[in-house]
Structure formats: C-alpha cells, structure tokens
Length: 494
Image 1 (cartoon, one colour):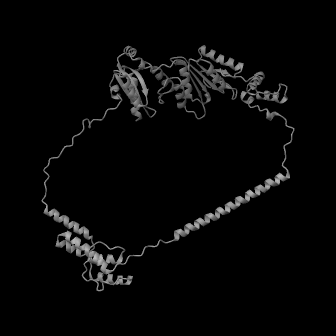
Image 2 (cartoon, helix red, strand yellow):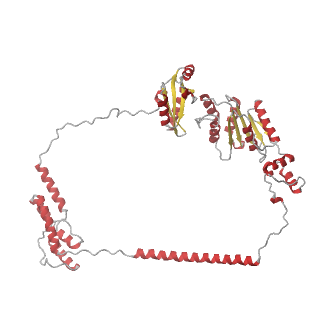
Image 3 (cartoon, rainbow, N blue to C red):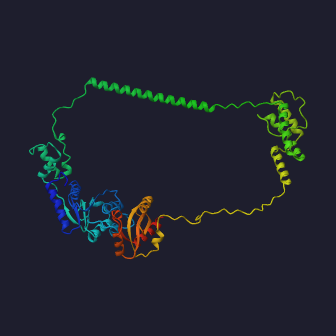
C-alpha cells in the first residue's frame, strides 16, 4: 500500500476489491475533480492482486484509441502482435488463443475520454473474457460506463482533512486559529485544495515594506540614463557601419575589370610559324588534293595571327606576301589596311585544316586495306549456375499457403531480426523447422515454428520431446490458418 493514505480511503479500496470478488468485473469510481480518484486507483492497483497482470493507463484529451489498446494488451500478454485493424476484444481473444495470459487487472484513469466503441469493448470483455479480467475506471459523473457499478468517492471530513494536511505539513496552526479553521471549512474536504495551504501567506505581517530613499532613487535614475545613452550610441554606430559597408560594395561592383593587352606579332613571325605547321601537315597528308585543300586556308590563318592574342593553327602560304616583312605592325590602322587588302583579293571558306588532313588519311587508309570478313564464331558467355533462378529467402510462406488450414504448428520464436532467427535455427537444429515472414506495423516479423501436425495431440506430443533449452522459451500451439491470415495481411500491406 502507498505510504500515505487515510483510513476511509483504505476502506474504500477494500470495498472495491470485495465487489470484484462478488462477480462485478466492471467498476467505475465516481467523484468530483480533486477528490483523489487517481491516487485511490494507484493505491488499489499497488495493493491488490499481486499475482495478476496489471495495466494502469491515464487518459488525456489527445490519447488515441489505438494507444490505449496497445498499452492494455502489452501489459497483459508477453510481446503481443497487436492488429490495429481489429477491435480490442478481437485482439484479446486472438492473443489469448495463441498464449493464455492468466488473470488481468486494468485501471483506466479518466473514463470521460473513452470513445463509445471502446466503452462497448470494455463491457464485452468484462462479460465474456476467457479468464479473470477486472476493470476499474475513474470518472467525474455517474453512468459514464452504462453497465458498470458506480462507487462514489465522498469528500473528507474535518478530522480527516486536518489529518491529511498533517501528513504533508510539519507545522500547522492550532485548531482554534480562525484563519486555519475557516480554510478547512471552505476547502470542503477536497484534498487538492487542502494541499495548497501555505503557512506564510496566511500570517499577518505588521512590518511596513522598506521604501527607497531619495539617494537610491537618483542613483537608479542616473544608471538608467547612462544605459539608454550607450544604447543610442550603439544604434547610431551600427547604422554608420552599415552605410560604409554598402558604399564599399557599390564601389567594388562599379570597378571594371581591365583586359590584358593583345599580343602583336610581326608578319614574318606569323608566316614562319604557319610555314612549319604547314610543312608537317603536308608530309602527313600524302596526297596533292589534300595539300591543295590546306593551301586554301592560308589567308585566314594570316588574318588570325594578326588580329588575336595567339596564332591560329593552319597553313599560311599566301599568294601575295608582305613586302616589308622585317617591320613590326605597331598600330591597329596598319593591321586593318593589310586585312582589307588580303580580304579583297582572296575569298575562301574557312575550315579546320588538321581535320581535313585527318579525314584524307582516314579515307586513303580505308581504300588501301581490304575489307576483312570476321569468320569467327560468336563465343557464348557461360551463365553461372542458378543465375536465372531467384535466390530463395529465409521464409516458408509459400509452403504455409499450400498446407491444410486445420493443421497445427508449434511456434518457438517471434523476432524482428532475421539474423536472430537464423542463429536460433542453427543453434538448435530441430527437424521440421518452418519459418513464416509477416509484416505488422510496417515491420518484418519472423515466426520460427515446428510443423506440420495433423492434430493438436500430435503437436502436444512433439512439444514434450523438444529440448529443455527450447522449452525455456515457452513455445505454444498455433493453427496454420492463423499464419495464412497473417501472411495474406502482410501481402495486402505491401
């Protein structure tokens, strides 16, 4: 029992337990807010029925039905697989058939947040549960659960009110104190109000509050003026700094990037470089037609050498070379005059000379070589064994779907890690091992089973012959039709 509980509340706990023993499986504890319904429910679940599977759920305005169902079943069964598509009662019956849980005690604090569907499910389980199931709920109004037995929680008397306060406060005023006596009467036996008593707030203080002197007031005023001045200076400085940074960015953006001066070459240098390149391309061409095609680009190569930073690749044999090849072209006007003169005399179509030479060599080589016929037979690439077959997995879902639905299995293990299932099978090395893979709540589960057995007696006999290490995991019996349903539900979720 909890350390601090009044005698009247302890007697009420015993009364609730007696009503459960008389056959009333659904009880609702009714009382106004602050009377201690939650504290009494915690005391009941702590003191009574230590051998039961217990579940205490405190409901709120944002609690979902699925969360309540999950908590109740997880505290009643060992590692249950809850199907949220089924109701609370259906999940309870399915899990009980797989692994009986024994007697259970459910305490639900805040029945006003229960939906009508869950209220009906709780009433159905209280009547038709396969084993003992006691349900205790707390509510602020009667008839919150239509078929439940309402037990009302009364306010505390003056004696119990003072006794409750003595449990939590070391020093209390005497009973004759008018302020304390008035507080007890106005509290109305509500524990939440009684525990808000504060000794210091209910005493009369005759000392006047100290007032600030004129010197202290002037000091505070001076400090306020200094702080305000510093703040204004900081604001102005920040504004000036922002304007300076903006001006620097504008000046940087207005600056124009200076381009490097073009390199001016003499006519003789341009002609000499192009002559060397033309000689190498002429030797590689091996054809007079290709040489003629290269010569047609001499004028354009000279123009490129005179007008850009670097000389263009190409042949530069000109039909009319410059008379004064030793003098440098020092101005843009002379360059324009030479360009206009050469352009007026020769008009050619510019192409890439190295590309023409390469094409000519390719055509000549292709003409000289005879057409080769590949007489070799195609080599077949051998395929690895079983490449066309899909590698098998750990699950035997196909085998389960082909079995008789009335057959039985012994489920040994249910895990969400495939490696754990593999190690379990390799460790025990049992015969007739079958593994089913299902998906529940977006998680993959592996059921390690021993199957099949035509009747339940055969399964019981096989379970008795299992090793002691396997029996320590408490294996249970399961129909194949249930595994089929779980496999089909997993396929639907995918």
